[in-house]
Picture: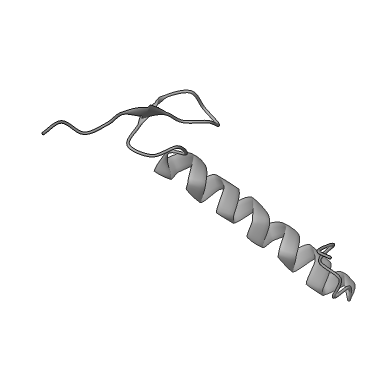
Length: 49
């Protein structure tokens, strides 16, 4: 049985998933940084509706 290969939607490299682990970690880090900025500014609205 062979593993299905994908191409990372962010960087274009071969990956086992739609987004490779490296890009996923970078995206999570960026989200956490933005969350910290919003919380430090005193805003609680995340923009979700």
